[in-house]
Length: 334
Image (cartoon, rainbow, N blue to C red):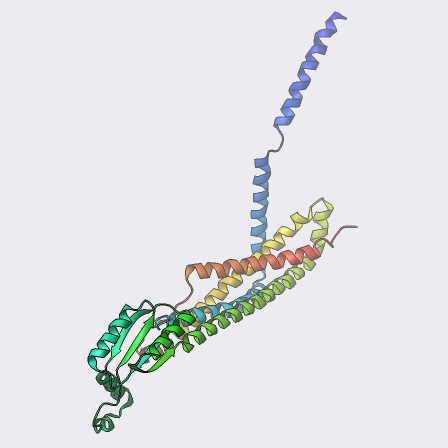
């Protein structure tokens, strides 16, 4: 009886060691993360292989996405170039002050000094009658007719650039100038500035609406494409679900397929826009030179290109997500 006690004690001391060894051999969080990342990499590679295995259908789907994305992208680039073209114009309104022809030169000088000291006036430019007549003669081509005039009919004009574009301050300044005894007429040229700002705002709103509409179209194209992929692999999905695969496991390759469709479509859209700009740059430069302007068409910057391609990839991913959430859960083994 006493000889059996050491064996029992040895068994009792051996059991806790066996349990501690089993606990240290478990899967850690790092192992799970590593396996999760490895599976995502494999699914991304598999989706790309399937994408390249059907080049014609993949290219057609990517081209449809590219055309839908290239249209708003081209409009955006066109609007940016338009804003660049008008950036050289004076964005501030201008006030033209036509002086009374009977005003003496000394009075005109004092009036100009008051204008320069006015806090509502940022810049004053004087156009003398001789300068105005010479400019009119150069632009109109009526030099022979103007030479027959006995005296210069044009008055002195002060061109004012207001310090502020506030409508109330502009009206106050213009009314104060009209009340002066030395002025004959005051013209507040602010309508074209307001119309240009309103036109730009309208174009931006239309661009946003058009882009949103075409983005929905891109998502629907990807949804339909991924739905066809799911139906073609229904038997494969049933088999992997029979062995215990979850919906998250099954939908990953389809999500990556949508990602690749969007990414390639965005790259093709960028190429189409740049090709169009290359074809238009020559005629646009010739037109600018005819107006003695140094304007040149500008393409997409790196940031805009990344936004286009990244947004396309996100739209493809979103379309794939909608497709798999709607169809994967309905495929269950019986």
